[in-house]
Image (cartoon, rainbow, N blue to C red; front, side):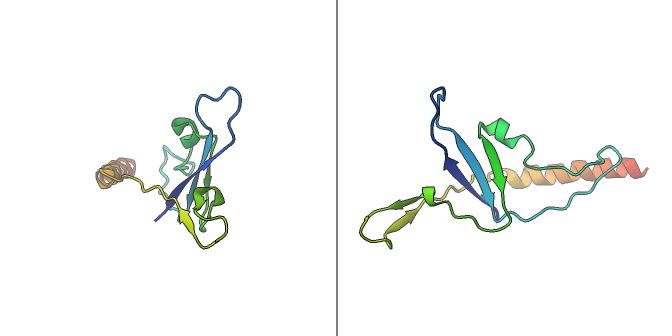
Length: 113
């Protein structure tokens, strides 16, 4: 399952909140069925940065560790590291996926008729 991490960027003079980059790693490439009304593949991360206020969204298939998300508790001992992890709330996600699959199946059926 894909992981979400936030990489905070240095603040600029005109920033009302800290700028950040959303990093999605361990993301498996997805296959999409294309129809006549949709000749180009869908990019699931298209315009996501704009929607959430991020400077960018970086997506990787491999695991990416962001050192900025680690806190060293004792500067003398490198083995006292705490890693921060953001867990997404996927409440209702299954229902949305099923509804979208039903909609896509109906659209595909209409094209085939």
